Length: 163
Image 1 (spheres, rainbow, N blue to C red):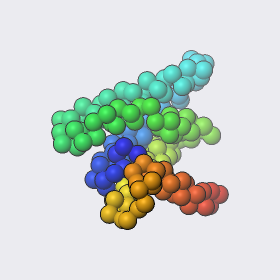
Image 2: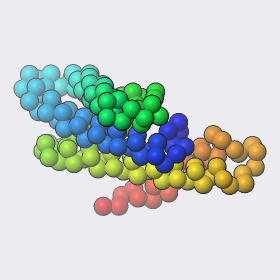
Image 3: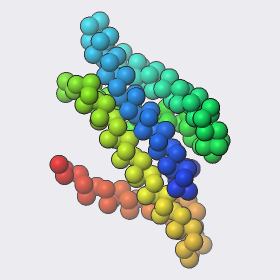
Image 4: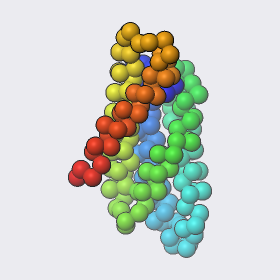
């Protein structure tokens, strides 16, 4: 909600999340396959994945601060919050299930991130239009944003089961 008020902000966070999700899914698969399974320490999976996600987010923040200081300033607090996004951890966990290969884990992370970016940009575009619309006073601001998010979730639920 905080970054989705402008398309450029949403796209910036989407690109950062795409990088984080792709790299985190890949590294999580490597950790799981080559460290946790051989050591019979699969119970440490969640802790290891959270550590990987935190490191990747910090690396992304450093790269963004160096190469795009304006975008880093715009995203501000929202960039480190990628670490606490449950979807990032879920993608890392799903990348290690069903005996996925490294390539399929990487593509699964990338695909989930592209979907996240698409939804974020669509939501930001709709919020930009809503800012110019004549909305009754009680529904302005966060209220219409939550209503819109609810309608979006209902629309995307229609894709459930489509393969």
